[in-house]
Image (cartoon, rainbow, N blue to C red):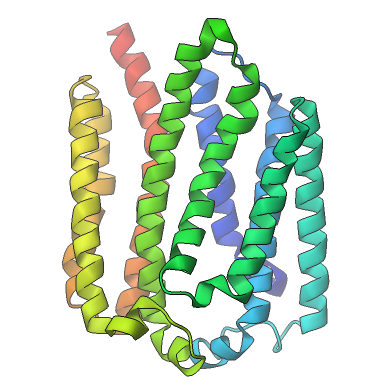
Length: 310
């Protein structure tokens, strides 16, 4: 169980579920050809999860001092798992994940695409060792990597199957994936700042340069609230221009109740949030907003099918 906690198995399950939803709740329902067989797509998911798990491990290895201040009771490395064992696990996860990625890149006859897995792995290492200490840079990188886990679906499943006769249709599919990648980036970027507010004390003691340390927790709460308002307005615009205009009313109701509603709660709550407990709650709310946001692609797909039959 300690190893499962180390690799943040709940987050990895959500990541895997997200990629499976895009495949089996969206792409498989479209009248298009996909490059990967189902089992090969499973390997793509596995590769993504393994590299993400390696990222969590190296991050915890580098965060041992900070974790002694921020979460002394729940820290794992140096307490229940040795640093040497953690490094061994990190290398195994990375090598396996990148190896699977290399295999898949050759399956779709795009061997250069294997570089994507290497770049992600290297970026996670640089994030853990140096980039996370740079103001907002670390937050943006984590958010970008989540967004890329959506885009990589298009790179491996759509792009190799695209030719002159289906460019328009495939372009629409890819643009939808990009829309969701942007959504994941925005919400996860805000969430990373909230997590920095939760860890402000330990980060300050370790000389980190996060937004809450630069501006103070109270001012950062106001900044995050404004970012939340902007994100909510973007969501409302997207729902109105893409779902309401297409008369996908079930998807509209779903979006308002499970995505926009929690965002409004977040905006109101974060304005006066002060304690670690508050920030932990808000971080969890954003995690579920991301999950329900991704799940909405399945709701939209079924709403379109239902609407077409009607």
